[in-house]
Image (cartoon, rainbow over all chains, first blue to last red):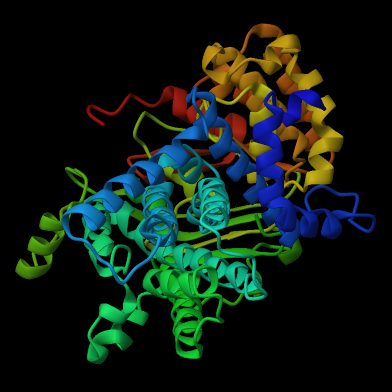
Length: 295
Length: 272
């Protein structure tokens, strides 16, 4: 059994905490009433087992070849936070925002997850082409697994964010449970978007470069280093159609202003995220059939 | 890997499983090809956006060739099919359509039951994972549940005969060792149809004999085998039906010895 679990207990523990909700459901499904024959229909339990193995594979490969491991996902936001804080307190001072470092981090954490997960999701079918081309399995699992395996970074950066929030004297308030909701919606949104970009990337290999370029654009279009209140009133609605901007705005409301995220923000976030997932599923199923021939 | 009838058909969406007499005795049909054609693009360099746009704007037709042309056959359970043909005759394309990895451009493929395929060495494996980790990944890809995989795990490792190498990363394996692992997983998935594409050749004599014994056991339990190889004596030993492909077309389909005799007697094609 030890051979199956792998050799790094820390990594395994982090992994299992993330996947806990997913796998719990899976084991319940397989539990006592499962038919004895192995070749039962590919029900939910099998799919979750496959998802579980794919995420585990990504973790093992990534951290086996990386000596500093998860420290990298802390270093990146810290450096960005330092630079942006320097620029916007010393060069372009912004006196309306107290505790600029935490303010920035509230924007950087959801944005970083967006770029990492979308990049990984976009290339997921190509990265797994030895599996996609040779084994018949539900292929939509690959972009979703890529997004989920980046949740490790997300969780670590969220931990970093909490440390900073508390260190700067903000208190845990009763609206914190909303954080789980908005971050879950971000994961849904990214899964939907990755379904679209991953299958397009198989047909046109330049899609990944478009995605990388769009990440740079996104950095400016999300209120990371400016407040949502600075955005002109007449275009705020368009801003909120961008789920990443909505997550940042809602997150700041909860963490820094100790208030519930506003209704329109949550509604826009929920509608666009679920919509992205539905559109992603439809697009993927339409384009999936020739994927093996294009790889 | 659906248990029920899976159909890929060229007409999109028009695919409720058709129950009208595909084989002589309908329920006995496991795999059915009906006028299946598959084309690929000539000079198939990767599509990039620029080329896609240009083709679309100029409405130019892309030059294609047939990898499979109008292939039809039925296969019942408890049968084993040898697929022979020169390199590039379409054998692998046929297997990809049969396993549902590729979808034919015309015609339809019906599959009844689960399929496990040994298509290419290392397919469905990752080089940086250990043998044991790859067993789990591969088994879940082939549709096994967690419980089944854990139950079969020791038997898979034992059958592979890899011993302590099972905890080494796959990139350190020889091709024979990869084959041992792949075959061990595939037979433990207990598929209704087992597809093998030439890979057994890299195994040593002992393991090949073990594989043949295992294949015979599957056959006796009513499973179907599709076996692509150039080792004709072995095909004669294992298979009872054969299918001969030539340049994507079905040249001959029938009893194994008859087809293989004709195949051996035929002159090789001048060019592929």
